[in-house]
Image (cartoon, rainbow, N blue to C red):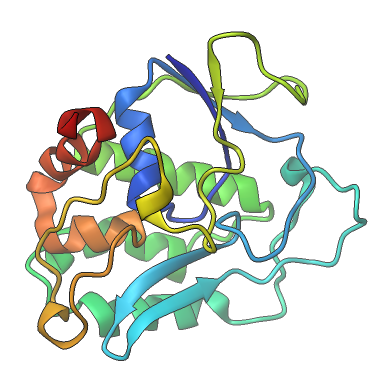
Length: 213
């Protein structure tokens, strides 16, 4: 199966379930940037509940393609995001194990383009989870992909409930603040990784909708 997805910052678990299940993944780079999507934000479980972390971007023309969206250098977003991750996941079982893999993205390397950052983080997460998806950026924008290909460019969105996803069925796993807030489904992949470590791949496998058919 071939699937089309948007670029996403520390994408949710449902995104990585697709990377696991599909034979080929096209990451759309010629779509227009859309605000309030996972393109530049992720959701984590903070001590105060679900928290959105957003990357500030430079103002661009309405028809600017995703591949040309630049990260704003006028805000200390890296510092803020890293502090939020430490505050939220510092007491999880596997944060210390993976922290040095993520730290350079927040304390060192600066990316000019949002899509480059998203892609680099995705490659890191796939390596840590032991995923090896066949991924590539699109060559052109296809309004309607070829027959047999799945267009999920609009499927994974902060305002859509995971329960409505025909592809993904949230599989509960340990979360450090679960006693306070209950299980929060389909957070950023780092929530799964920091809480479950090497078992993350098993959770992804169990989260595929066909696994419950």
